[in-house]
Amino acid sequence: MFNRSDNATATLRTSRQDLLDQLRGRGISDEAVLKAIAKIPREEFVPTAFRHRAWEDGALPISCNQTISQPFTVAFQSQLLEATSGMNVLEIGTGSGYQAAVLWALGLRVFTIERHADLLSQARQRLDAIGCNVAMRVADGTVGWSAFAPFDRIIVTAGAPAAPPALLKQLAPNGRMVIPIGDKATQRMKVFIRQQDSEQFDELDHGDFKFVPLIGREGWEKE
Ligand code: SAH
Image (cartoon, rainbow, N blue to C red):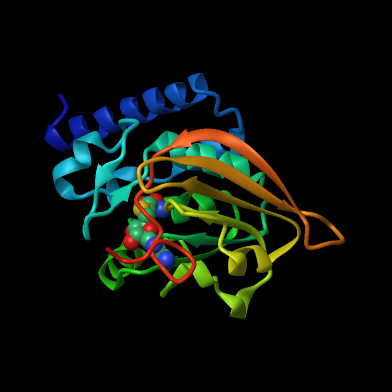
């Protein structure tokens, strides 16, 4: 017989497999990304009251009026990065720390910035608890992290009015930035690819998404 906690573990395990099947069904085909999602215990990144829903494909509330992104969105942005193990990646918008953990599980060197100090300290505790080694700071991420630039990859997990020039500048040659751009209600998922020998960028569009706003010097003004 299962006791209650075994039962809970078994439920989480089934829902983990269900989620992976759903992500495949929605076009996530990068096996490394699927493996990284399977590896990170999402239940550690959501408030206790929502633990039983951690493996549903939905966004959930975290502190400071922010959200942990939907697993599909995390998988989709991770897949668009086209990153390979050992690359360095800058994330803007640490939030719960879940996306940072998934990037770490992909074998990347992760740098992440969050504007809310209390979110960052909670994220730090969760990442430490599961052994993810990620560099983090509290700051306005719209100006990047020049001390560690250039970055092979940049991922922005809040909705921006436009591509922040400082972030484009901190991209390495052939680097890619994945960023939702639009108004405060909805955004289009954009990928900027820096050309090898110039400061020119190719730009791709990957459809509609809905993020909380990116607030900062090169983002939206605080309300
Ligand atoms: N990646 C997160 C989801 C983040 S929600 C996760 O996996 O849980 C977006 C986050 O971006 C919020 O926590 C918000 O506080 C943060 N944010 C918004 N503007 C920011 C800025 N200019 N710099 C850093 N973080 C910012």
